[in-house]
Image 1 (tube, rainbow, N blue to C red):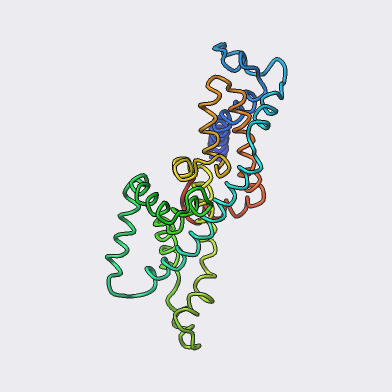
Image 2 (image 1 turned 180 degrees about the vertical axis):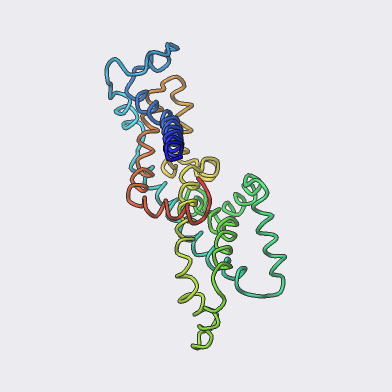
Length: 276
C-alpha cells in the first residue's frame, strides 16, 4: 500500500514538472530568440534552438529606438492608479453590498453582475467620449479612468465581507461606533487578503491592457509597454530578435514586482480562489 502511494506521488510530481516545463518553454524561447540573428530566428529548422553566436544587437537597437524609462514610468503609473482606485472603491462598495441594507440594494448589485457578464469593449466608446469631453486625452488620468470602478473587485470584496461574523459589527455598535467607524476600523482591516487579491488581479490586467492605452494615448510619450510593443510589431515586421528583446525588457517590471511580493501573490490568489 505504501509503495502504491509513493508511486502515485512520483507520477503526480513528474506530471507537474512536465507541465511546468511546458509553461516555461515560450519564455525560454523568447530569451533565446532575442540573442539570435534574423536568419536564425526565422529559420524553419527545428534543431536551431541555441544561437550560434550570442548577439546583443537586438537589445541595443530597441534601447536606441524606444525610451523604456518613460514606458516603465507610464506603465507603473497606470498600474498604481488602477490598483489604488480599485481597492478604495471596491472596498467601500463591497462593504455596502455585503453588510448594509438599503433601498434598491439588490437592483444595484444586479447591475454590477450585469457589467461583469458583458464584454468590456462595449464600454470603450462611452468611456472615450467621457475622457475626451473632459479634455484629458494623452494623460495618465485617461489610462486610469476605466479602473476607477471595478465590478469584479466589488463582487470579490462583497464575498469577503459576507464571510465575516455579524458579532463584530454588533460589538462595534455597543462601543459607540457609527457605520463609517465600523467599516474603517473594524471590518476593512479584516479583508486585507481580499484587497491583496484584488490588487494582484488589477495590476496584471492593467499591465497587459492594450486596446484602451492605444485609443486614448496615441502619443508616444504617453504610451505604455503593451501599446509600444504593439506599435513595434508594425515597425519590425520580420525582425523577431528585436521584438523578443523588447518583450523581454518589458517583462522586467512584473518580474521585479513578483520577486518582492511573491508571498502576497500566492496568499492573495489562494485566498480568492481565482487564477491569473
